[in-house]
Amino acid sequence: MWRSIFLALGIMAIIVGAECLVIDSASMYSANETRPSSFINPAGSPSATAKVWRPKEWMPWMLLAGGTITILYAFTLPKRFRRNAIA
Image 1 (cartoon, rainbow, N blue to C red):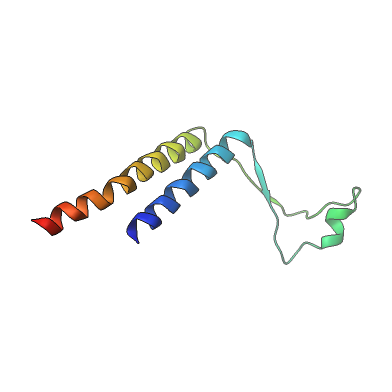
Image 2: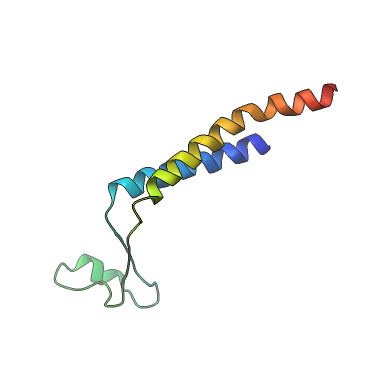
């Protein structure tokens, strides 16, 4: 079970890191202040209080490296547990 959790976290970190490499910024809208019709109307603004998030330059590389190390660690987990069970 631990192996699958670490694999999932590592894969998620790699995907988020790759997305951060591709985007310059992400706009987040509040669900309370936004109407679905304002997204369809090209002349309308979805929300005046949209928050813009810009990832730091180091963030994608840190997520990619951390995800890779986590996946590599997850592949060695069964070997570590078997060695302790035998001894």
